[in-house]
Amino acid sequence: MMSRPPRLAGAVLARCLLAASLCAVQPAAAGTARVDDSGTVVSQGVVPMRWRQLVPGRGADNSVEASLRVALRLNLSRWLNQPVKLYMGLAPVAGEPVHASWRTQGRLLPGSVRSGARTLVFEGLAGTASLEETIELTLRTDGRALVSPQSLQFYFEVDTP
Image (cartoon, rainbow, N blue to C red; front, side, top):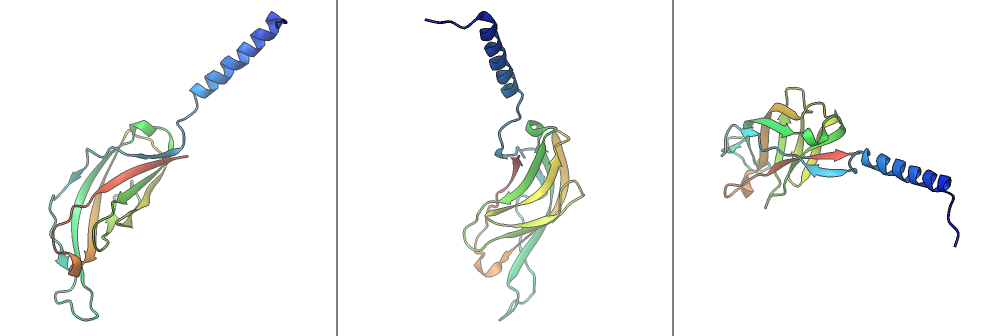
């Protein structure tokens, strides 16, 4: 039975320790994760929808819409000082799709999303642990199919490289 000289065994051990230490400082694996938005405040819990046209008719616009203000508070501490892509999503709804569009104060991108989808609202370095932004949100759907109140579930996700 042959054994390695002590010098060679020490070199192998040093390489193993170096490899282990490099693994320990690697950033988290790429992926998608939900963002804690429990600090977000909605101006109204129940929002009445209004017809876009007073008398919808044949060939007319049958859309209903509502507007509200949302004070977003997103906990990004998990991704602090890391490059991220932040998305706003709207969960699928039963029946006709709901369209949401928003204006921002500039920290997030203005945009729109349809129920069952998500859209990019920020791309860059997560420079603060808590991202705060007020958005003016407008909701729109086909009023002919709206027969009872619906609960809309918005969410935020982060993609990391």
